[in-house]
Image (tube, rainbow, N blue to C red):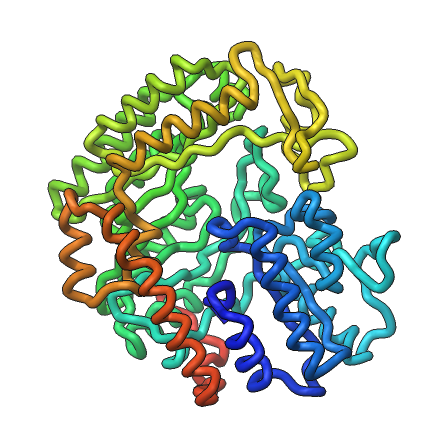
Length: 482
């Protein structure tokens, strides 16, 4: 249920009576889009679901996964509370792990291969250290009851993992080899075509950790897109340094349909960028991004650049952070920025499956570290020029100012606003650079969530299910690329 966090207790009881029975083995929670909710709020929701599910089936089990389960003990001090609900924790990609849990509960396998929690009986942690994945046959099959609108952006997976290994990154699939985990051209062509023929979809969020990581991938995608008999638009994560290494991509990506780029700039400070392993001359990167924007405007396919920034690099000062913020705020080719404060978890408190290089050895990178605060998770740190408390204060000040100009774009447009709007109003807002999004969100968000939740309940209660035409998904025939 996409809007499960909006359900009242009566609505939870109602839909669970419809959805589960004595045969139901497992209920899963995803934490990937938890950003608007506190851990306590989500834990309350979990307890509510468990209470009503076990009235129907006392033997039903619960699994939690998604972006927030990046360690064996997620949710800080809330872990023990979550363990009162959940029996399995799945970190990273879950395709094989989830099937294994179902096989275990169905007694098709004699034991769970996950790591057992010593302090809890029959509770397991399953990570990609044990359970791998493959990128063959990864298509997402949208159905009519998903209520997809033709002007809405939907996710499509291009490849997995990142060939880089930035020193602040905890992502488990960092440092992969260049050609690992590509999807096949034929399969991507098939998915684009299915979505267009059935829903009129032409807008996408490319789910790819570094879309432009090689010439080979970009050339392959140009071939796929050129074979389509319709144009597409998409947003994706782009490695800005590679736009300097491969200058031809500045135009090629626009011609493919790139309309939104999310760029890990991290810092304007030379020392911080060096420690982060960002490389390349920053001036060359900014010039490449501006040239890319100018080209996009000249061909009436304007791109929107979003910068991703970290406050707390070893060379960052309050002055350097504010100076870079002023540049971002006033640059015509940048429409939005997303700031985070450097987060560190250290030593015995770091239970991440893949701690970052800085976390592994903070002193090497110029940080003094102190015991975590009462949340039991985030470490207090101090660099030459600031500490975590100063960084948090700076972050709050920037966010307060940022709300006056930062324009929602890209992923937010393609996915969130499209659900909230009619096609005409979506297109009008998309073109209007001066639209007051802050007021719009305040007035429309709650009403939209309520409407979407009610629509979801109606689909569940009316048992709206479209059978998948399996023959449509047989091995696709190879495309003859010239």
